[in-house]
Image (cartoon, rainbow, N blue to C red; front, side, top):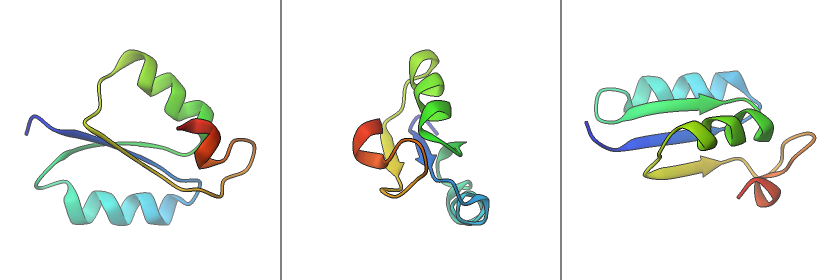
Length: 64
């Protein structure tokens, strides 16, 4: 499991669903806000970032 995916969404239910569906195949990290995602991006490497477009404070375009 060399690939790591960062999922960013303000809905914890969606993040839990991604974790249940994909954790047996990929290493997953999650963040519940753009700010939390930026912190994770500063300290880790991710193969893919999957980001919600509509989040409070910082939307997906601002994050990406």
